[in-house]
Image (cartoon, rainbow over all chains, first blue to last red):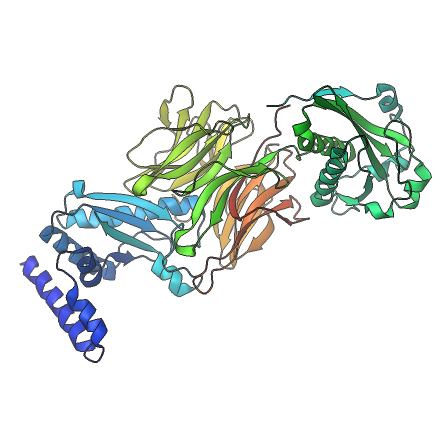
Length: 153
Length: 440
């Protein structure tokens, strides 16, 4: 049942993309050329990252939805191993942020395990505040940097 | 390693300074504990006998001027142009340019070595204040200049100097979203910079062993491998993994006797502090909390460890006994406290503080009392002590803008918050670790 839900969610995403991109041919074309089951498919149609509040490693509601989609996709494409990268904004000290990033990666990992992804498929690594994406020093950039990114291998 | 032979020069003359009247002598003396004082005006003449003598004098001038306690009189003002290193100068010429101290020296080639004699004259009393003689390899001229700077500093302040030291730090280059971070080591004044890691993976948080022969640091593995702690010989470059644990290991620090390394190991969302015996590689857990316990630092006597933990909610400073146990919180102010470092004198703990307004560097007594902030900014982080416990180095980061990483630079400041200055580095720099005095 959850598989059907996930597929319909993906289908819905395609519909939204198609609708919103009616007048932008190139973007529409890019969306439709992604191969199902590819890294591009995962990033574009599932979402490879979840975001956290300041100094928190609690997975938020928006993050749970993303991780639910990731879990369904990973069940379908079970050939992938994943590494979850934990990151922080720059408003903490280097070593503490390494630990906080690990905690965030671990929180995302535990959530995926709870959704049925085998623990053996999931590694974690923390980058603390060493790999910002985007590079920026305002609230918007910091919010995007407090993240756990699921990388496919 | 070089081993300069040190002998006291002209013991009789040095003895003659004993018993000089207090009022006159005060001018070549400084009490750093006073809230304010005038820098000591000092003249440093190019050392005679060898072209390297002028370079040595330049290193000494730079050291003394940068520490904030001296005012180096420009050489262009000197009246007596030619000062013999072994006979008294024309004191009146030096008084008239306002000097309280005069440094002279002589460099002599002896076989394949150089012999360096230096004297500090007390211009006010017309007496020799101190003097030393060294013999060493010619390539060590810069170190000899630092050792002489330390001797001058000690004679004038009564405190040990810190010029014959090195600084390890993280060199940062490249784009903001993919910075290359390498471990570098340089002399305290920025000279002799060299890189100890190749930059292929991120390397962070270097710390010296007490002998300076080794450093410990954290580096990521190849192909995004997890961060591990490495022990590396500074001269040979030979490096070895310090334990291979399932979780990330980081934040390594040597014990004062060099026999142990404490570090954090993160696993399953918990970060605890462990101690590893360097020789036997035995691992022992020191904290056991579901929280983040990291940035450990031994007290100077090795009996206690200060660290930061978020076990009470926000990051605060805690002290425990070196073998673990007896943990007690020592920071209670507003904000988050991080990166505690125990002074080599044992009296203070320096820290990074994160508040609503930004970051700060501060010191508190080791029981947590007497908190005092020294520097603040958008990002200031990672204090490290000079071996005399009077000066701190830390790093400043500027905000990123337009997708470009903000610059990062090393700074030093004295423990009363005076004389902040940027320490020159060839690239952006963060995470300084000040070495002990280089063993002679």
